[in-house]
Image (cartoon, rainbow, N blue to C red):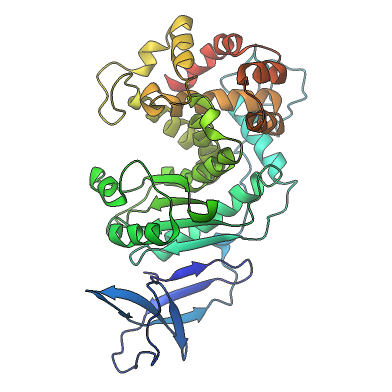
Length: 402
């Protein structure tokens, strides 16, 4: 378990904490100034906590400096699992194992499109340097330290991937477990940032697994996000969350509330799964299954948590159905998830990056800050209208989500 205090992440130092059980060690003589304040005495770190109506020093934790290299924090993206290198400049359209076909909007090859897309991300990622950490992390009293280490690694992937487009002077990340709701709401009181529901209410909505997160803006307009990490077990799919939420911070910088639903939520799912999940399973199967599994949320006019028997996959069996789904997802204010934004938008982003590349997509994202006509910007960027793109996407969407 890790300490209740604010954990400042430093680029060169990782601090790990273990509970110190001896009751013979005296607490600091000074009074607690505020909840979350810390003081170290003889390698023991004390944190101010609330006890009833008082603020007192909590149980100490021994501070141990890890002098070994923590491999969980190494920033890498794993290569694709394949026997031959991707050659996206190849003139072959066969889709053979020798080389990738040229991916165009008229040839969204079901075998190679996602591989070319992911390869494009890795190529661009490897051109970049990891920025200096500017994140201030707040970790709840029951968050598991190994989970926090992994989130730190994933955040470093995100900050590096988008550093040419977004590099905040500072931002905050708050991690809490399913039993840390009161603590997390205390952090909100001090640092700001809120979601649609209170944190304790949201935790109660997910009794079988508290793994939700939301990006927001804290006091003094500081970008931040909150994430619940369930101590009862996490899956490979949870590896997308940190990158997903960080990309929402990127989108906030370019006025996320002007973006269509398929882009706002779908792109965050795409980057989270292709940089986080895919990195842990380079066959790409886990990312595909994750995105495909999100089709169950489709429930126009209802809640994405309790969808009816009708499925998104039924709706997209025709081109007109695909057009209907994506047209509905053009709204920036609709209930994005119940309209299928996660699975449909992620697949659309996958295709756009496979054909035109990561930087072209991010250039399009950048237009939202100054433009009032995203469809015209899309047409200028991709050489076709959104409606034309939807029809070209339809066969690939069916193949990926069926």
